[in-house]
Amino acid sequence: MKKLTLLTIFAALLMISSAAVAQTTASGTLTVTATVNGTISLVFNSDPSGVALSGTGTNAATLAFGTVQAFGGALTAGVTRVAGATSFTVSSPVDVFVDKANVASANYTLKAQLNAADAVNTWSVGGVPVTNAAAATITATGAYTSNVPETVALTIPFSTASGTNISNAINFTATAN
Amino acid sequence: MRFVLPLLLFGSSLMTDGWAQRKGSSKRTSTAISMKSETEGTISVSFVSAPDGVALTGGASGQRSLNLGTVSNAAGAQTANVQVQKLPGRFIVSTRFGLSIQDGSQHATSATVLAALAVPDSAYTFRLDGVTLETVPQLVQGQARVGPTFMHRLEIDVPTSLTEKNSQLHNAILFQVIPN
Image (cartoon, rainbow over all chains, first blue to last red):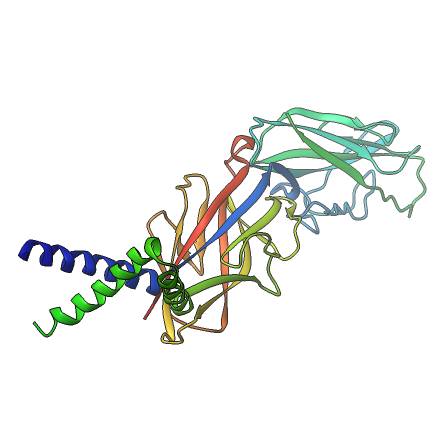
């Protein structure tokens, strides 16, 4: 009889305990989902030995050579000039920084294309001629997360009239390999 | 003995109800009323969409889904009200949602809110109001008022070193609410 009483007390305590727990806690579940896409990004940085870019650190920078002439005169800081027999070339290194995120790629291919046709002057990036006809491959093994200097060069004929304004854009495309 | 006797009476009553479910219809009715009373007294939790957060979908109010959509380091988020913050080596995906606690018995005025991840996740770090979530429940709010909806910010750290193999994020946050 005593055992039965004790068992009854124990069972009652268990039931009361579970009833109390059921009444004093609540639970909820919030399921969270997302899909992460792999991406790469490209920005231009000013090279220490080149022209200071406006818009440095972005993907839409401006390289201003300033006023240039074949011989003599003062050049904008960072501009290098080489005069030839019938033309002269001004150039400046520009750092291309390509970052990757959530991509297994080891390196990237960098291509460049002139935005508008230029029948007078000659353009090059990293020594590779660049026109608006097709994108030219600048490198097929670009290193991620480092400033890769690419020299942008503009060759101007001596026949160009003084005071001529030259303006164009070079479109760069980095593709993960 | 004064303490034991009431327990005995209560315990006996509960057990009589339990047996009565099998024996007589009149007793079943009585039991059903008793259970309803318990349900009304139960504290509950519900999730709601925040005005500046992702729209929660599906399920009962206490079991909703939060889909952050497609996110990336360079392009950000493609779902409204999902923010992406770029940091060196990682990016943070965040949004807000509301949580409210109801108490049918109206006995509790405040409650403690604990949260835990349903499954361990070595790739992503989940934070709720700045508290890093683990599979062990973490204290999120010690004095949450019962009744009003409180907004919470969920942040998920996505390392940029993760590749396509780990691109699917799927987990659940288990909330436990205890009246104070």
